[in-house]
Length: 154
Ligand code: HEC
Image (tube, rainbow, N blue to C red; front, side):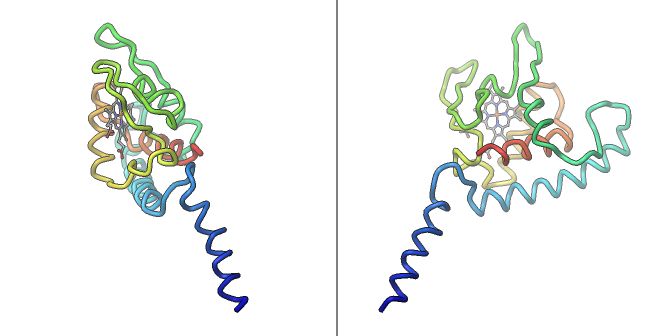
């Protein structure tokens, strides 16, 4: 009779951190890792093709460069824009659209289980927001760094 009890106790210990806030689900990890692999491949090609453009690189992705990119300020259409302008400096927090003032659920996967569960949605938003902010799509290197950063936010 002791064994089922022990198993139940163990299941509780194992299951709790999986459900707890501040963790990334298996699905989110899968989507993010897939995107990172695609971006790593693309970054190599971009680096070869766009050498000198300044935004392509074949360096490994880092959370630090991702955070820098997230905070970089662009003055455009007489406004100051950053990713963090809408998504807040702490991506675990709820954001607010700078124009519509509507709330935006947290961007960090650890704070929002609905983020990074569909690679197509991520790509569509990435491209749209990069166009808004930088008037071009972001490079695979920039996207890879950003995902590496958001993945590291606990
Ligand atoms: C003008 C406001 C605004 C700015 C600036 C902005 N975003 Fe967004 N972002 C949004 C909104 C609104 C959504 C969708 C919210 C939702 O689905 O709840 C979103 C969603 C996303 C998502 C979708 C993630 C997912 O899987 O759901 C990504 C990725 C993203 N933004 C990246 C960026 C990046 C990178 C930048 C900077 C280059 C940026 N955003 C700047 C408003 C903004």
